[in-house]
Length: 105
Image 1 (tube, one colour):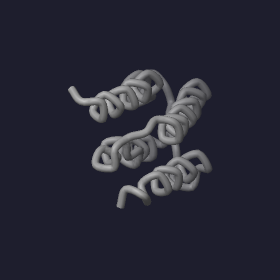
Image 2: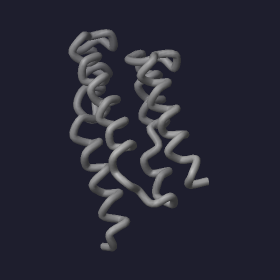
Image 3: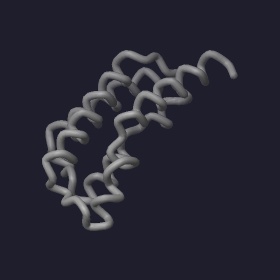
Image 4: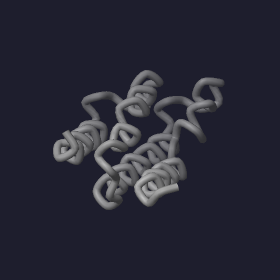
């Protein structure tokens, strides 16, 4: 594995550690937790912060940036009612990703 692929894998690994989709959305789907649950909100807010930090701090090759696009995961959270597209964290994360991606274009 080359160094660039290792950088991408480290970034993805960091993101997966706090990812609410893996840990908690199944509970929402099963009705054991509500999308508005404060615990889920806290985990989601933390994940947004970690995601932003990863995008700011871990250099990723331009060709690999699409693998770190937060939009698909945000879409799931919006569809489940956990977030909305006008939520400040959602907007900030999407804007940050676009800014990081500009030099890659």
